[in-house]
Image 1 (cartoon, helix red, strand yellow):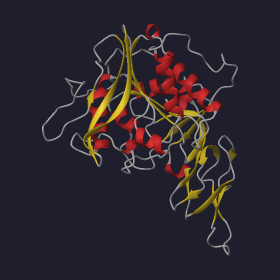
Image 2 (image 1 turned 60 degrees about the vertical axis):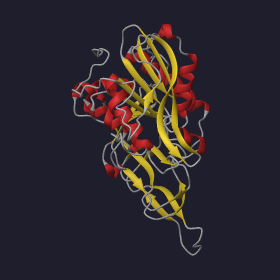
Image 3 (image 1 turned 90 degrees about the vertical axis):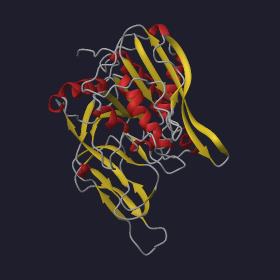
Image 4 (image 1 turned 180 degrees about the horizontal axis):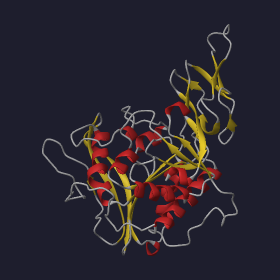
Length: 365
């Protein structure tokens, strides 16, 4: 593929003159970035979001940022901890920050290891306020803290970038086969670039997915701006294993080499002695299985297993009603299990499984 030049986009975006600080008004102070995106070399700093809290009338939420710029090349934004209890991406980004040699970089790397630090410390998916940062886009400069931060990315950082890598995993709620995934965007050139980046993660599975829990996704806003967006589900269950961490570390670096922002040989699955990856499509909401009532959910399947339509994927138990039998939750279609429920308690409408149907690169394009 032809690499886009730094700052290029597949669609036009309004100009954003000052990416270091958004418009500042007395009424509503806005987030600021303490690193200079125009300077060469390596910098450590923060995204500072102003905030007034119970124990601090004047304070803020500070997100640590590492920035490396060296010569010509693409601009890549690497993000972890979009949801607080998804730790694999946080570890992978922190490892990259600690070990990267600026001389290996060709272009610009902006790395934010944890977008939701308070949720990360608490081991929760959502912010203490109840905000889901990954449902906060495009955000608002005059909104709550999460909306101001989303607006800063939307109008400040995304326009600077060619690639956005958003590292997710299942957190406490879901266990995934380690994979990278993508939306099937309309622009064919953008879609091809996203497909190539997804495959470079070198996981056993990849997934085409749709949004079944509302709008406002971070990847969706970046895609709307024409960016090449690469996302992952690097394990889950709230327990980063050695295997899931190694896969995230190695996958992230290989994607960066594929993009060209990090020097070194791009490895293929054949190079690693692995069989070709399986690409799964779960672009229809009917492929997502939901609990039809509350209870204690017992999973009967594991990610990577084949299932048939109607096959029980799990059982809902009723600890307060010993007179009741378990209620099965059935597979919505034939296919391969991409993810299953991790945390046992479920409410009515909780997703307990995702079934993907194998597809090909030709079909995607």
